[in-house]
Image (cartoon, rainbow, N blue to C red; front, side, top):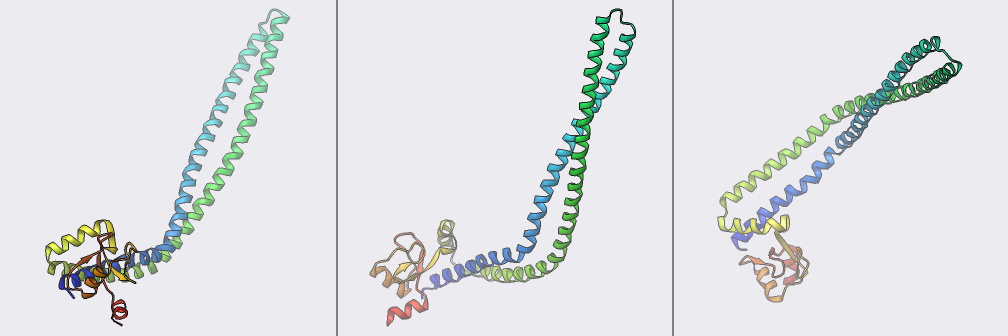
Length: 242
C-alpha cells in the first residue's frame, strides 16, 4: 500500500477514535449532568419566585400606604363633620367616611390575601432551597466516581493525541494539507472505506476502473462523486480477490 495512503488511514483512524470517545465522556457525565439540569431548573424557579415575592411585597406596601392615607382622610372627615353647618354637608361627609372605611376594609382584605401568597411563596422557596442542597450532595458524591472515569478517558485521549502528533510531524506537509482540506467538510469520514464497490462516505457506486485503483492501493484515490480518500478494508479486499 502507498506510504502516504497508509499514513492518511492511520491519521483518520486516530481522529475516529477521538470522536468515539466523545459519547463515552457524555455518558460518564450523564448522571451529574442530569442533576445539574435539575438544579438549574430549580434555580430558575427560585429566581422567578424571588421576583414574584418582590411584586407581592410591593402590592402589599401600596395597600398599606393606601390604608394610612385613608385613615388620615377619616381624621380629616371627622374634623370637617364637627364643623359642618348643614345636614346636607354632614351627610356628604358621612358618605365620604363610609366610602373610605369600605376602601380600608378592601385594602385589608388585599393585604391578607398578599400575606397568604407570601407565606406560600416563601414555603415553596424554602422547599426549593432544600431540594438544591440535596442535589448538591448528590453531585458531590457522584463527581468523585465521574472524575475517576473521566481521568481514564483523558489518559486514552492523551495517548491518541501523542500518536497523532507524532504521525503528523512525520507526514509530508502537502499530504497533510490535502487531508485537512477534505476534513474541513467531511470530518472523520475524510478517509473512508469502499464497501460493495461503493464509497461508504456518500454511498455512491464507483466505476470498475476506480475500484481497481483503490484495490491496488498504489496511489491516493479519491471518490469521483464526493472527493473523500478511498481505501479497501482487508475483508473487502479478500472478497474481491476470491
